[in-house]
Length: 505
Ligand code: NAD
Image (cartoon, rainbow, N blue to C red; front, side, top):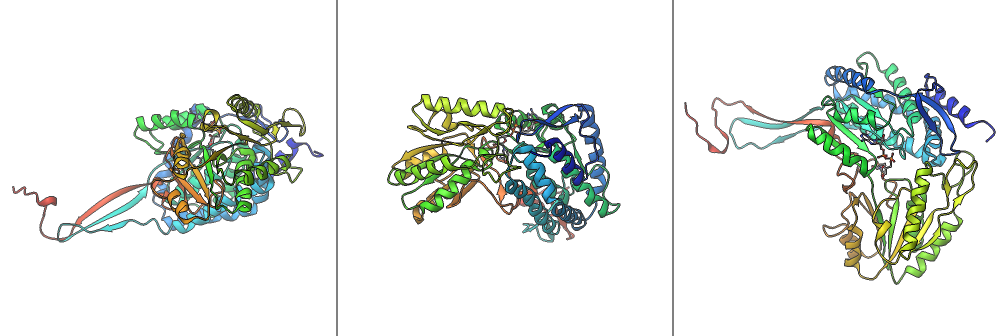
């Protein structure tokens, strides 16, 4: 790389509007997986800082909840404009910090723009209901009010889009947000906040201080948010391990929680599948973002009659896929986030091999310094749906298994902890509808003839079981950011009681 990465990072951050000194040795070194070298050093926020941020956000809530929804939408509209202007820079930050290809980095920023556009429309559609009442001269309705402060905890692999799925909706719903990004990707968060502040500067005086804040730090900062009764909703994206800690803590204080956790996503390739389309969908789903998407395809069930068509073609695609530096090449597969991720991939492949799995690929690639971890994606032909196949290893490993009976494969498909995303490749109407029916995929996302990854923001995003049950983004996910009140109004001169109860005094 002709210009040092550290310099590219600083320049990009400045272009996004970040004025903070990125060289302060405050305890948090930011390492780019592209080369494995440090690109910045930041001061971490303390638990006391977190408490101060929560207090400021609560103060902001008292004002923001009274600003009309469409006016709140105007702030998000301005933010979308600023995001469009900064798309290249933010996309580059995603590539630097998370190692994504330029097109995936830009795609993540586009997702932010899309959810902002969605939220602007939503700001005029925070609809309640009018409900038929059993009492004469009465009216019953349901109204939605701002909820309170929203704490957003995010994972490294999507350094900005999931924040925006939450923040854009929360802001139009009348809630201030506090963001605790992954300790592996704090720079993208600071860059997003700086871009947001440009929108704030254009918005006017009715946006209170502390409407959107970023806290840089690790789990301890996240825990301070999680444990605070003054944070009404925690939206946490990350591993199931993290969710097992966060979920009960929020429940213990009767807080609200959206959990977006790990997945173990599968595809089923049926005899009638369009093989060319299936090949491309599976290749992107399994290898894209170096297997580091929550929706990555990790398991593939292939009908025995087409196994010899699709599996050799997949192996060929795996052998020829380009692995390389996402900032300097057009490679389709970038680096793993760090050594821990590489070690877990090596361990999972060894375990699969011991169980009789035939491993193709998975070798470490020499790309730049040995502090960076690039791997050839691995495809593993497994004799059974067992062992490492049953859990999420956050790396590009695709376990392939043969099936013969459709009902059996549906059972196997659902026999894992994760319940995020799923796909069926078929042109058979019965198989397709069964997969989407009550006895079919038990995931929050069930697709036909497209891969498991690459969701659009218009639908509700999230999954069941160990994925946590939360929903974000489109559809009616906005309701989680508001509180519901049922109102009954008596405009008669009588006082009839519900259920015919008599209480004459
Ligand atoms: P992680 O669980 O290690 O960290 C995620 C976030 O949680 C980080 O900000 C971290 O600091 C914070 N955290 C960790 N422990 C905490 C605690 N005890 N209290 C409060 N906060 C805590 O996950 P990761 O390695 O960054 O990301 C990869 C994982 O995230 C994978 O399992 C992936 O499937 C999942 N993920 C899920 C979705 C989804 O929408 N379902 C999206 C992206 C990633």
